[in-house]
Length: 191
Image (tube, rainbow, N blue to C red; front, side, top):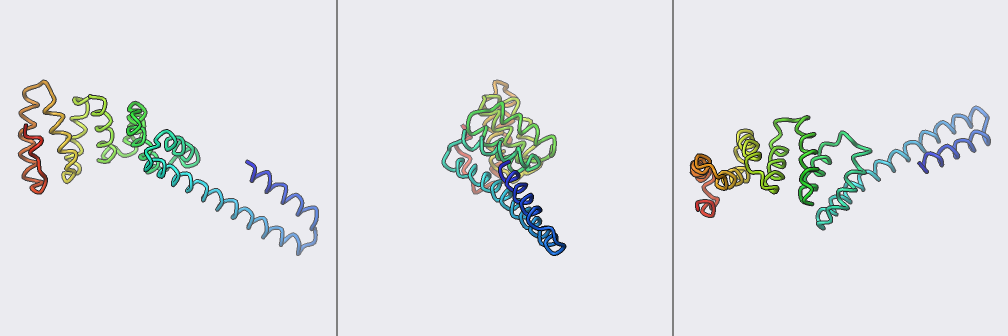
């Protein structure tokens, strides 16, 4: 807001001081340059906000990261990568309901995005909602069969079920996972 007032003040002074045709042309060029400079400053400021959020995340200062991301998204509401980062940060900060809400918004835009589905499944699992996470993990595996973390979480979720059929499915999926990912040690899940 300050920069807009400053720009207006600069332009008003220039209009009073210069009224010749050559001066008008110079004023026009100067206005354009000032506008471009303000735009670049604004873009740099927003990029700095996003970078600051990432630094907060790396330092595990999630509350500050969330605030930075929310501020950034006010200016860039269509930035899905920043929105995805916000969803993940909410989950890391144990704000699962907010994480799920953002994941739902992202999934409305891209219902077949395996990263969004996996993130939502993780948030559900961290809330001990295995049954709600299972279909999401199954979809992730269909969309991205190379996603070994989805296989691992699906197996764990099925093993923790009270349903004998789910526990049997866990063993079957574990056998498939061992075949698909022979370099990964799956023994911890075999119990």
